[in-house]
Length: 108
Image (tube, rainbow, N blue to C red; front, side, top):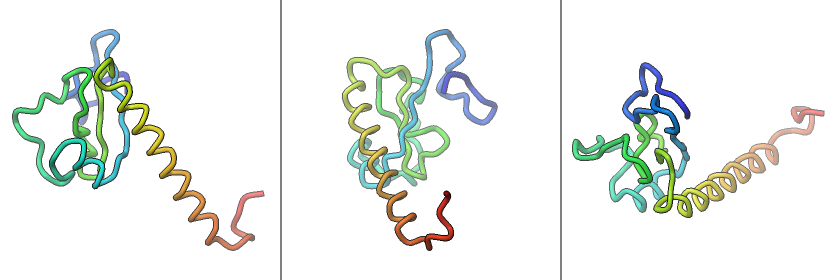
């Protein structure tokens, strides 16, 4: 994301050179990363605009998403690892879904 939206402005993305990387990590990985369940409310002491930090996603936390505002030295390696994991999970979901669909339902 490169800008704020009316229902998603807590990351303060309007200043130049601020952006946010959003990654679906699932429940187990979310707990490993943040030490709390995705469905728990965001603690008052968590600054959802903090740069170079793994944070709960401000809107999609409950669905197992994390966010990183301006990933940098602290979060670049974890971000790349999490993106690879998310891509692999999406690939597995796609393979599972297409394996169970009749051939007539598959695109040409």
